[in-house]
Length: 113
Length: 114
Image (cartoon, rainbow over all chains, first blue to last red; front, side):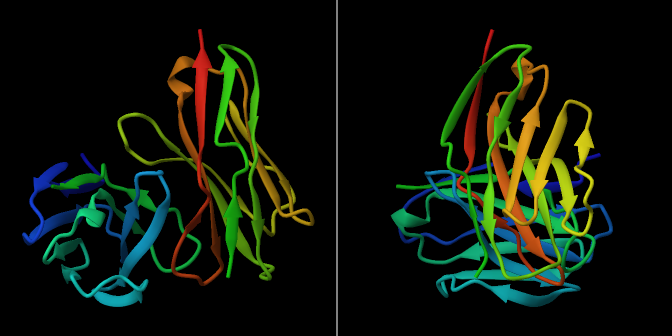
C-alpha cells in the first residue's frame, strides 16, 4: 500500500526531449507538491497544488508544467529538457496547506544527456 | 524569508553511541513547525520527528529526540543508541503556520561506524 507513488523511478533522456513524471497519492490528501533535489542534495519546492488549484509556482522555468487532473494526482511535464534539469524530483502530499506533515514519494532520478 | 541552516555537512558516530545533529533557522513568525526528515541511500524521504513551536516540551520518538530552543532558534536532533540503519542524510525543515511550503536545510550526512 504505497502512500505516494511516482513513475518512473529513473528517467534517462537526451537534451531537447519532452518527458513526464506521474505522481499519485492514496492518502486522501488535499495538497500535493513537487520538489527538486539537486546534485548537492538541496531540496527546493517547485510547485504546490491544493484541491487541483495551483498555489505555489516557485519561479520555475516555463518548460516545467504541472497538471493536477484530480486531488490524488499531480503530474510534471518538462519540455525541451536541458542538462541542468538533471536532478531527483520528489512528489509529496499533505492533509492541507500549512503545518501538516508532508509525505514524500520515492523520487524520480532524471538524467539528461 | 525563512532560512534553515545545518552547519554540519557530515557527522559520524560509533554504533550504540549518541549523536546530535544541529539545525538553526531564521524567522520572524511566532507560530511555526519544525521537522527532521531522514533520507537513506534508498532516496526515500522519511519523517523522523515533528515539533510545534508553541509547545515547550521537546518531541520524542523512540530513540530520536529534539532539543528545541525557540529563543535561540535552534532545533537539534539527538539519536540515542545509534544503529547501522540510522545511516542517512538528515534534513531539518521549517514551515510557518498557514505557509505553503517546507524550507529545508542543506542536510547532514550521518555515518554509523560498526
